[in-house]
Amino acid sequence: MKTLFPKFLTAVWMVLLAFSCKEKTDYQSAITDGSYQIAAQLKLTDVIIHDIFSPPVASRIYAYPSIAAYEVTALADPQYQSLMGQLKGFEKASFDTSGEIYYPLASLAAYYKVGTALIFSENLMKEHKEKAFAEIKEKGVPEDVFERSVKLGEEVGAHVIAYAKKDNYHESRSFEKYTVKNDPNTWQPTPPAYMEGIEPHWNKIRPFTMDSASQFKVAPPTPFSTEPGSQFYKEAEEVFTTVKNLTKEQSDIAYFWDCNPYKVNVKGHVMFATKKITPGGHWMGIAAIASKTANADWKKTSEALAKTSIAIFDAFIACWDEKYRSILIRPETYINKYMDEDWLPLLQTPPFPEYTSGHSVASNAAAETLTSVFGEPFHFVDSTEVAYGLPIREFDSFRQAADEAAISRLYGGIHYMPAIVNGSEKGKNVGNNLIANIKTSKAELQPVTSKN
Image (cartoon, rainbow, N blue to C red):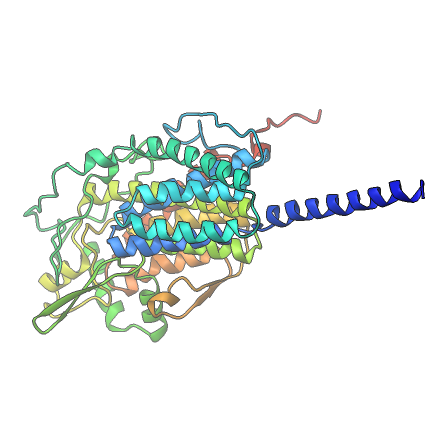
C-alpha cells in the first residue's frame, strides 16, 4: 500500500497536468489562420460601401487597420519586422507584452480599433467585433488573457490612429473644391449626375513609402487635338471603336472590374444609386483570397493585407497627383463633342480627370506587392465580385489579373490607352518601391556578407 499511494497521486497529477495543458493548447490553437481578420476586412468593406467612401479615401480606411493588425504580428513573432521607423512618419513605440497574451486576438483588436475610428457607421463595426470576440472567448481563452490581449491590441491601435491623424487627411477636408476650367482639353463633369471632381488635393496626403506624390511621374498625356488623324483623335477613336465592337468576353471583363462605388442610375424621372466595392477593395479582397489559397497562418495573412493596403494607398496618391496635374478630358466628353453626340461608354464615367487610370496604377502596385509575398505563378479564383452579382474569374498570377483590370478601362470606354499603359508603369514603380524599401522579415534586414 505504501508504494501504491504515491503512484496513485502521481497518476492523478499527470492526468490533471495533461488536462491543464490540453485546455491551454485548445485555446492557443483556436485561431491559426487569418479567417477572423479576413472577416473583419469584409465587414469593413461592407461599411465602406454603406458609407459611400471614394476610392482614394477607401484606400486610407483599409491601410491603417491593416498596419495595426500587422504591428501585433511583429510583437508576436521575432521573425517579423515592425513597420515603425520604416513607413514615412511612423514613429517607434514600445508596448507592454508581459504576461500571457493571445496574439491573434490582440491583432484583431488592433484592426477593429483603427477600422472603427475611420468610418461613419461605427456601430456596424462594433457589432461585428462583439460577435467575433464572443466566439473567441467561447474557445476557452482565460478572462485575464482575453482582457490583456484586447488591451494590447487597442494600445497598438491607438498608436496607429495617432499616426493616421498626421497624414493631412483631416486638414484636406477643408481645402477648396475643384473648379471646372473652360479649356477644351480639360476634364468636365459627366452624365448622368455631373458630379464634382473627387479629392483634387489627394496628392497632399502623406504617402507611406514614396518620397512624394510626384516621385513616379510618367510622360504627360498625348497633346490635345480635335483634328481627325491627330494622335489624340486616334486614341479617342480607339475607345469609340472598341466599345462599339465589344465581344462578350470584353464586356464581362469591363463589368467585373467596374468597381464603381457610386453608380447613378436614371429611369424616367427617377434617379437612384447603386453602391459597390472600390478598386482598392477589390484588390484587398484578392489579398484575402490569396492568403486562403496559400493556407497562410494569421501572421502571414496580416503581412499580406498590410503590404497590399500600403501599396494601394500610395498608388492612389501617385495617381491622383497626375490626374489633377494634367486634368485631361474624358473619352465620353470628347467623343460626344467631336465624334458622335449619342455615343455612350459601357461603364459610367467616374467623376475625376482621365489621366492616368486609377485601376491601372492601383492594380499593378497591388500585383507587384502580392507577387513578392506569394510568388509567381499563383493560381487563384477571384470571387470578390460574386456578392455584387458577377461571376468568378480565374487567374494564374496577380500580374495577369492587373493586366486585365487595366485593359478593362478601355473596354469600359472610360480611358484612352496611354492612361492604361503609363498608369500600369506608375503602379509597378509604386509596388517595386515598396518591395525595395519596406521589409517585413527580419531576415531581409540582415547585411549580406562576402563568402571570400
